[in-house]
Length: 180
Image (cartoon, rainbow, N blue to C red):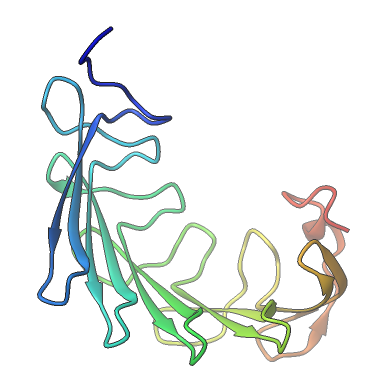
């Protein structure tokens, strides 16, 4: 049909953006063909972002119909810190009121350390007060990896909250089939 709005792989036909004083997208909203806000496939219709001095998103908040929206992982906002190479190395999760929260997997934040090859060499989980915690879905506090390339992990080692090596037993299989 001529001059009819179309959707491009999502539910919305129009995007509106507001920018901060440095030209970063501060607010983005999605609209349906009827002109009303409409949720994207990931569930939210508005995203609000704040940026650090390098113009990387340092806080991202999600909304639906003007109310905080909880992403499938369980948070309504995320704060990010970046390393010198511009990669996310810390994420912290918040509820719709801006309070620290534990995700359903039992952690508030995670830290990634990258190897010289640029891949995540170590991933660790932490509680509300920065204490080491076990990710209840994966069964470990920290995982260390080495890589052959982007698609091939050559080694993995798992650690508990005291950084002691642990075995995963059945927890490795749960939700990670085929990842040997």
